[in-house]
Amino acid sequence: MIQNAVAAVEVFRNPREHARETFAESVDVTLLVEQARAALGTDLDVARACLDQISNVLTMQPTRVSNVISGANPKGNLGMAAKGGLAPWQIRRICRYIDEHLTDAISLRTLSEAGQLSSGHLCRAFKISMGVTPLAYVQQRRIERAQAMMLGTEESLSQIASACGLSDQSHLTRLFRQHVGQTPLAWRRSKQRGG
Image (cartoon, rainbow, N blue to C red; front, side, top):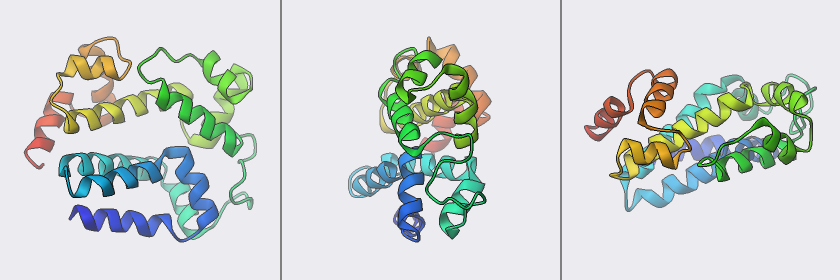
């Protein structure tokens, strides 16, 4: 089953090379696919966690994914920044900064410095390019990291919260419920049982 899912993601990655690279760099799909493939022979839970994250990416931005797969672009500028949005290099730099600093406090100021633009412009352009605000994206990445850690480690929820840059377990629980629809403990137990 997991091998079929990785193969399906591979199909997603190949149709339009330039568009795929632009999209994959902005949401780390390539990295997740490689992690899933590497984990197939050793740790199926880690492979499942990677595939869950890929699924989250694909369901959160279906229009953008559809455009990448078909090679279409409603603006007619495939691989280019959407009008009013961030340039591809800015998306890569800001997303990389977020992923590298998830355990730290991330402010709009530091993100705007990473993208070399003002805080106000960052908020508008990021939402145009990514479909969510920078704060929502940071929260989403923290929840995704927490999910991967819940499946890939035996650490307590309070340790996971700290490793994801959240103040405590209740903060993790509150954000997790908003994003996933259930508590981290219930989600972890359902995934461990194979549900």
